Length: 152
Image (cartoon, rainbow, N blue to C red; front, top):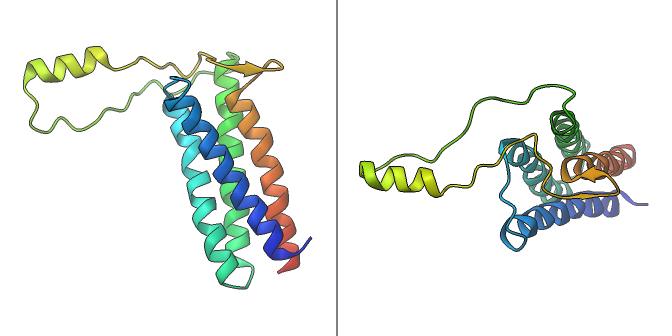
C-alpha cells in the first residue's frame, strides 16, 4: 500500500464516519450528546490533515492524522465506558449563545431542545453502540495512518 493510498483511505474513513454520524443525526433523528460531538472534532481534523498530507510530503501530517484517529478512538472508548456505567460522564451541558432572545423565546428554545444523555445508547449493532463502533473504526484508521507514516 502506498503512502498516498493509506492517507486517502484513512482520511476518507473519517469522512465516511462523519457522514454516518450526520445521517444518524439528521435522517435517523438521533441528536448527538456532548461526547458524540467530541468524537467528531478529531475526524474533521483528520479529513483536513489528509488533504494536506496528500499535497505535502513528509511525516508531519501522517503523524497528526494518526494522533487525530487515536484521539477520537480514546473519546469513543471513554464514551463507551460512560454508556456501560463503568464510570461517570461529564455533568456539564452546552448551549447556544442567548443573543437577543426574549425570556419567553429562551424558555421555548430550552423546552424544545432534545435532552440527550451521554449514558443512553440510542442505537447498537451486535451489542456495540455507535461510540464503540467509532472507537474500533478509528483504531483501524490509526493503523492506516501508521502505514502512511512508515511509507513517508
